[in-house]
Amino acid sequence: MMNQTVKSYEAHVHTYGRIWMVSALIMMLLVPVSMCVYFNAWPGVMPVLKGLLGVAPIYWTVCTIEVFTYAPMLGSGGTYLAFVTGNITNLKAPAAINAMQAADVKPGSEKGEAISTIAIATTSIVTTVILALGVLLFAQLAPVLNSPVLQPAFKNILPALFGALGVVYISKNWKVALTPLLVMIVLFIAVPSLANSVSVLVPVGALISIGAARILYKKGMV
Image (cartoon, rainbow, N blue to C red; front, side, top):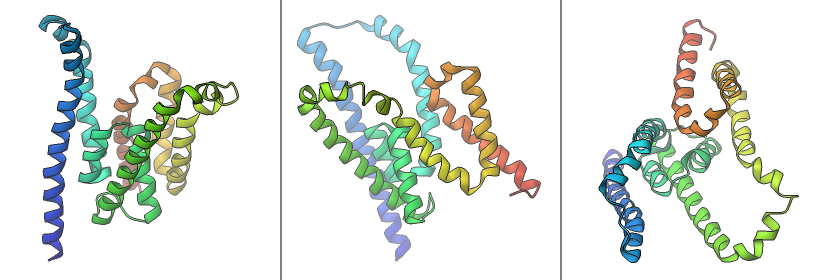
């Protein structure tokens, strides 16, 4: 009975997930189309193709890599939600990982699926509310947000977020974490421009972690 319930839940998740993914894609495409209609300004086929040629292959590659990287971690429901609402690397994935850790459940398990979906849904709602308030109050908050006192804090939000998460996971098994950590540090120091390719480096770091863990396991060190 439980297996049937789980299968029914997964079937519903995939059905509605696909519907909302397609709906979101259509809505996103309608934004530039509506602008073209309103201003009666159509770029033409060739300029669009030339523009896509430079960026589309990169985004398609990154998108494919992110699906294979994040889907096992976030679960079906969490994956659909995260890819529709966006900001996976900076917000959705850390929130889901932190929630599963707090609930003491493993990614990929039934409980992990539920916790991940709830966490990502919560971050999506909170983000939407904050963005809506930000748009409404931006004029009043602009002098405060641009204050020199707050600027250092805004510049260090992501390092603080991932640093806090990193300490937790590194401390759990520092032998496994040491190799990918050192490799990524060396890469970023040697090639600072890689900071703009975080989405591509996530799966690279994952492969390095898996390889290092495998070697340590064979040697009986972990």
